[in-house]
Length: 424
Ligand SMILES: O=C(O)C1=C[C@@H](OP(=O)(O)O)[C@@H](O)[C@H](O)C1
Ligand SMILES: C=C(OP(=O)(O)O)C(=O)O
Image (cartoon, rainbow, N blue to C red):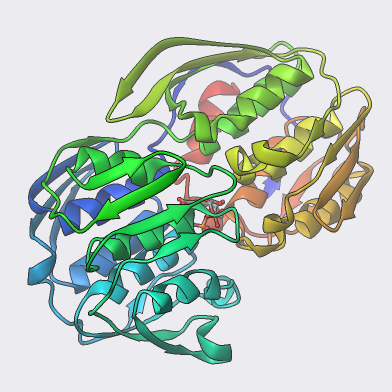
């Protein structure tokens, strides 16, 4: 796709589509709970549709009406063994959370993913799930998809997370709903806590302190409102901060503390940003974010903030190219294990566009005040990389050609319509 520089500032109001992490969890918990769960402002991105399809194969009735879902389930004891393998597509969240569910179900399943997902590590969830008693087979000692599971007969465990991963934490918590006894999860660095919040809302027997403790009480269906995805909003926050004259208001964006690292970074860099109309539903904060163009300063981003902005780091790299001075990102080695190696994908494209960005083992060093030229960049079929280069094209001097933008439908199907609506 060819994108020409935008001569206009970005102005107006945008309703950001539903949060991807919360949408996945609404399908999962709505399917595990007995009764009807209505989900509003659901994200109909490809990844979340994979989670719906997985539960349809397990026999759950899920009706999709635009961004509203009706999940009608008889509860987890009524699931049926699927006759075909379950396809997780490109979605790490579907894969890792579903492996937790499938480990609990007393039958045989096989599952697989696309090329990208097939090379992402699954041993991080398989190790604790095997400790709980699941029998799982696959390549390299069950480290990668495709995987086959003979589920059931699980027991609670105590598990200290060795990786900063909400997906691993969530896989264990979901498996615990089928396990005898109590399961305890300890995370040395906090990660997004949507599973814990939603489990509480569905009536799970869960206590959330330094240790998360959970036992296998049945869940009760409840309605879920999905706030806007701050990871999607981030593209427009950065666009408004770097395109002179811009002022955008992003409505009903999720403001859960475990996800708002991008707001902290923008604030520390000197952006003009404010929050209004803050509300909380089922433990999830959300509100309106207003942000306008301002002069920015380079900063250091590392430590405990990283899980609070992990998916925003590619777009933060673009922000950093426009700041005064250097920005150093560290402790973000997880970026190498996403849909593509996001450190190398960012360094490669920015080098083409004329910015000075260097990769390190666990992050990157970005020189500010960059004048971006144009050129051909590769998204490596990664939605966040493709959207980042689309936003970069707003400030380049010449045309940017992105090899393929179809991956954007994974998390933000209407991205270009929304961009056009505020950029004209
Ligand atoms: O739990 C989730 O919904 C997610 C957790 C994060 O992954 P990790 O748990 O692998 O860090 C994040 O990158 C991903 O986009 C969504
Ligand atoms: C890493 C991401 O998602 P997942 O792990 O679910 O593929 C993402 O959305 O940036």
